Length: 405
Image (cartoon, rainbow, N blue to C red):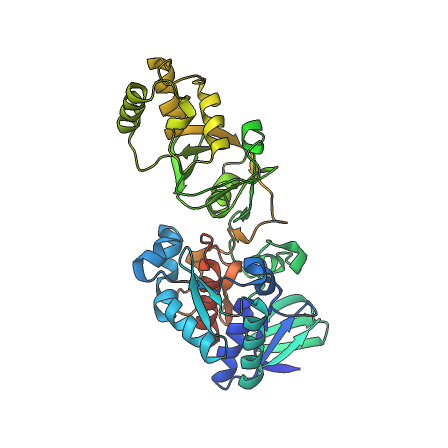
């Protein structure tokens, strides 16, 4: 069998790349080893699919970090979130904005996104083959030889959209890394990212079920240097922390290999001096009340009681010594707790690391190591925070690959 373009992997990136290549009139085959395409789309956002974000321009690029944002600049500016929204809505799926700048289908069904993409694949003329694993790829003459469950396939160009290692229940095994390495690419260290965090501190697990809003959470390296800070919802669980802020920090926690600390700022809107003055004033006018009652009311009662106990500041406001008051202020502003790791690839939404970005042409997604090979999506060393950023990067890089393959 011969085709002009072979796209391997029918997730978000692969579906987009196949659509774009086939719409150009390129004879395109899309190969997916699972029986059903788009599995990661289907389970994302609790089955609702947080498709993209409302952020744009330099603000959008900054969410991926300096180097990754610079690499993605052309892809994101040529196909920003507004363009992705128009693309999906034109395919018959109305979208709506929700909290934290997120975009979801109005139907709240990820299945609608997958079905729309599959309709576009069919209309484009691309051939989709599911249940078809690719066992090997080799450059051959002016093209590529693929060893597949369909038998040998020759392709003029190949788009790799095989994803990373996250959500292994969707079949993610990192096949693409080995193929890229064999064709001369560097694969940077891979880590679980956007995963819940595992913490041993009893006070953390004792707050299971509580959600905090308006609290800063940062990850620190062993020297105390801040790696990343987030002010997003935090969910306490029986194993540690989940929710947008902790999950955003997971990649950095993993990279620190058991030597990371988390730092909470429970009242980021107040300085230490302002908070200390607040407690002094409260002691003057409400001295008979318990210390916990003077803590900010956006913190639940169980949280306030826990923080007072951790600071060793129990008792009345009038009885609060200067030393205990300062311990309480420090607990509220900079409570630190060791964090060993995340819950791993089984629970991670994306993979940090992958094919080194300096080996990819950012304007076309073509390999600088192997002409005719195009890489996109999670296979690349690109990851962003929770909020549709990773789907946006996948669709934008895949569109470029499909336009040039």
